[in-house]
Image (tube, rainbow, N blue to C red; front, top):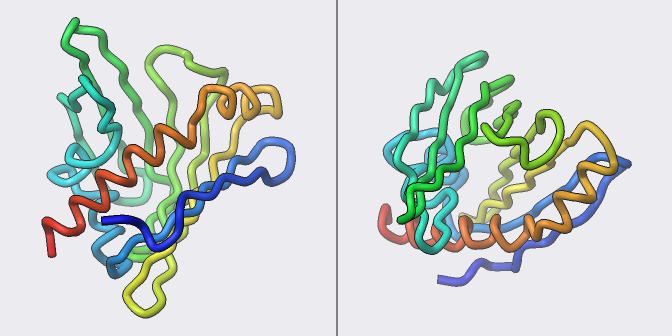
Length: 161
């Protein structure tokens, strides 16, 4: 299933990347897919050859989460963070950091969900510690990795019906 509109990437201020994508699903389902530890491994970071081997989520303000992926050669990539704010079916704000420093500092991620006629728009703002870090993340082709995950989320939405 294709998204109603393709992923859009834009910049805001000196430190923010804004990713906007639509899903053919109600906001409650998209929100659930973002915070349910049984669903997150089915779509987040679905890069070829990588598998999410750890997913723990304490979905509450101040609650922590942990994701760990492993490739066939045993290389691992992990992310740890905590929830700053959760507004069911509307907003998720987190602060996270990679285990290995892919970039300096933390990232504050704000996901805003808006639903209209059964289509949910997810607007994710990634705030980095500096313009240089933000620019380095863009060079890493962050949009490609996010779109791979979002395509998997499209498939999950169909499966959940």
